[in-house]
Image (cartoon, rainbow, N blue to C red):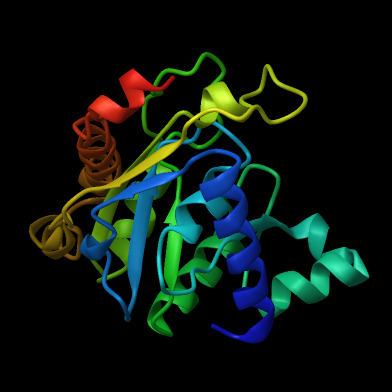
Length: 217
């Protein structure tokens, strides 16, 4: 971690563990170094820094490209090697930047649902995450965040001191589909993207809440 990232990581870590009583389960399932995709559900603006604060390694966050135009925000985001994406979070330039960070050994957080949930429930996966997975060669670690919807979902103007929990799953293996994608038809390739996205979201859904979440809502 560079100094800028370390200071932010320390501040977020303190905030999440004190105000939100954050708990992190199985962070050792995320490689300590090298490229990795973290695929998580998305319930709140706080999800990216929350997930990152539970890991001892830096991550490359996605950020709207408009934020880079602000001198201060842009300088900070560049120091973190954040990935600029358009308003919809996709686009060829965004995908290229994601793959570049992975080739450089970075870790990327992606949200298969594409946007924050509107009702607190898991949403269907979009094919975009499948495209990123197939175009890369790195492990994919499913992640599930509990409590962030109740703490700071769309329906809250200010964060509430609710318990938040992050669970990291076992890495997923998509090598078979990656190999098929190199030789299949375009029609099949589209199916593979969605198949990977659905499989990733299913792995996220299988990460069940722990007793702690239900005992201290």
